[in-house]
Image 1 (cartoon, one colour):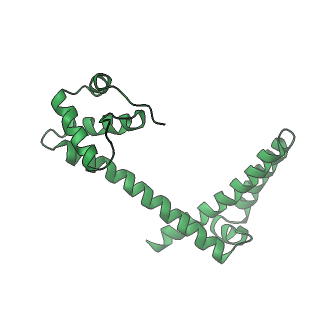
Image 2: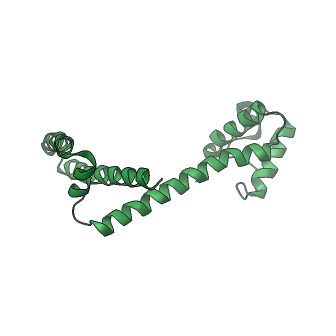
Image 3: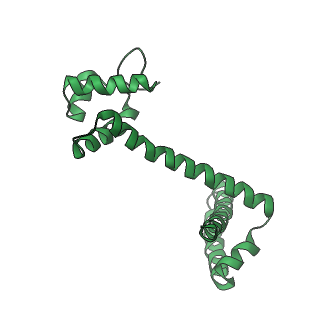
Length: 158
């Protein structure tokens, strides 16, 4: 369950008046972000701070415009994350078992070997204390190789 912030605490935290609070509430209500209680949650405060700061830095725009400017960045980041996941899926469709040949072609044999040496040493160190952590690190190594392949493919596709 979300923790709600009182009206007075919200106004004090954001440094806004009742008028500003009503505008923000109306905006969040229209966007479906607040319900019957008309109170903001702890999770929403950081975004609200960004909106208020953005609006104050651009005094000729409304809270609504500031909201859209701030949330547009979040939508862009979500789209980038979805794109990265799609590329990872594509890479594993092409080379589901081993990304080593693709990473070697990108990084070069010497750099790839150095990366493997570092991971192997760290994996051996972790295995002494926690075998699950060592297995997690092996998965992270695969994800790093996938990320290298993705970054390389996105640079060549631009």
